[in-house]
Length: 275
Image (cartoon, rainbow, N blue to C red):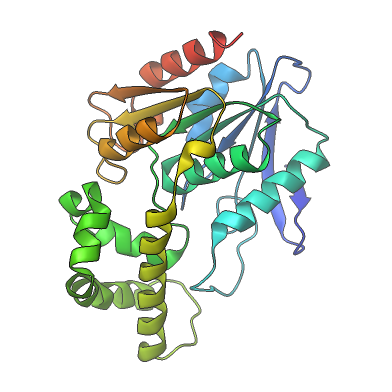
């Protein structure tokens, strides 16, 4: 199986298909706690015409899993660095199309467009949004929030952050304690880390503006998505110029696999129309 070493010496698993294609390289970026296998239905279609590249982020899938967990770790920047190293390792240059799934994969895809605007031909965001749940604390916290709070995250959290923290922190601590995490912290230290991460997330959302994405962008949301509600997709569409929005009925957060025929048809049509 193909692996490459990142700057920290960890082995990262990747898959590459149809490297002979000269049309375009399409990079698939999975979400938190997922892997390249999530995209198998999209890979089967895209590899017929395009060069396709995907990899398991550190701590995911068949890539190395660090022994120790850093609760403050921001995997977003680590994944971006690892992807850039993989592109260099395989000598892949533009034009590149980026497809990101979920909040983490979608956010990374957006930031790649910011870092390499000259190389990115198009961006596709699947069940994504504008919130970073890029480490264990944020991911657990966001999963614990009621659906209506997620829809209007800033308004709900900013107005009642202390109440929400008081209600969710005990559950986050319990989830960390029951997991396979090697954490050497007291309960008070964990509490402080959780509080810091939540406030950081709120501040990042206030400042985030994806208008830096200039390439043609397709945004697909699932009407039944309880993790990245369609309101997030609509907000991305409002803020990203030159974007197209598609909302899929009877599709949840894992719509690309649940309703693969519909997603694949929209994705392929979008890419083909760019020629």
